[in-house]
Image (cartoon, rainbow over all chains, first blue to last red; front, side, top):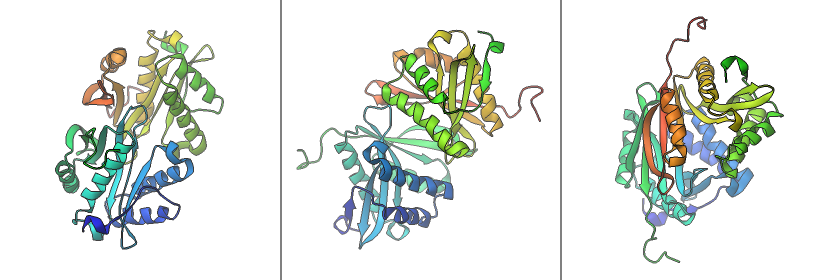
Length: 172
Length: 172
């Protein structure tokens, strides 16, 4: 997948609710409880706008949702952002969409004042690809909480310090 | 303060909203943004009951709120609980109320299936008493995220593994 094939949308509309539910469920990686949470965050954003603390970035390809992220400043922090969700549609996986999504998310977060981004993931074997993805994208394994999700399944907290300067040509 | 002087209440009522706001603000330890969040969690509990994911424990002494905790299972985890709030009224501080609150909270969490409790606090000098408190109560410093709250002010994540057996006479 080439970057120019993706169209970016930095907001959610009511019609994105079901698209986001579908893409989350289609990966097979999330429980129903987790999918409910994903949609709740959309609802929070639709109901409360920026005050919700949830920002969205959607990547579309050929009119369909190729992936999305949900992120936002962690309440009580000056400029630490959390990547709450990053999901790529199964048919778009292993084509670089995840890396582009993460880069665009970092750009959007930086524009909103972010200096750090955190991403949590599981230490279980099923999430090895996720961990490798974050490491390949410049994220550092900042902390590990053993048995966090369940016995034998810990939480890995990745962090990336965002550079103060935007890439060439984007300073304004 | 002796334990028998405290009356425990394991729920919130609409009238607790303002009592909780008052106690949070009276400590001088929390920003207005943080106090708003404390009240939002009460509202969430009042609106959605147990589905909110927020449990409350209130300690009253002589009819007044001496302290409270807000805690709950972390979504997506089997049995990890987060201690979202623990607040002791200024006039009740340094009298053992915090330790009793934490013990009663652990008991309530264990009854709801908790096997671990996490508590976040700041690494800044102003929170040294909080860190000593958790350490004295058997919490282990599980992770440290530098610069999390702001430059120079990191997040310390404390954790306590809850014993499977309840104290004598409480097994049922």
